[in-house]
Length: 128
Image (cartoon, rainbow, N blue to C red):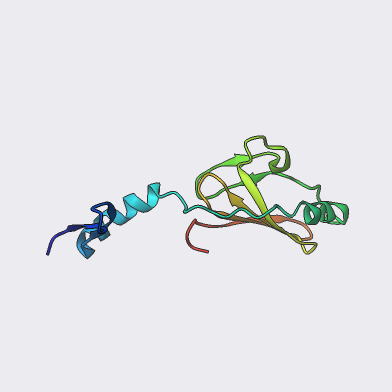
């Protein structure tokens, strides 16, 4: 069995590459490390929900607009006013949940606000 099979369409244009299972296992960590997320259809950010979240803030600590991607290390102190737009808001709830997408690697970042503390969680790109 060949380790690499090139796949062409009827016009002779390369449309894909097939790897043997053994070669895939060797190459997989390297490919996934540099793989860019497929094009993401961006929906409008829920800024109204974010404003409502801020308006009804009643936790025992101040609002903090920092966001950090635990996958690629991207971070900003104020995602709302970040000109690079490294993070896009996907969800904001009055219950204290903020969900962002890292525009650098595609990871999903959750900021969970509790009465006395806040927790960052992350789901790597392609896993959620």
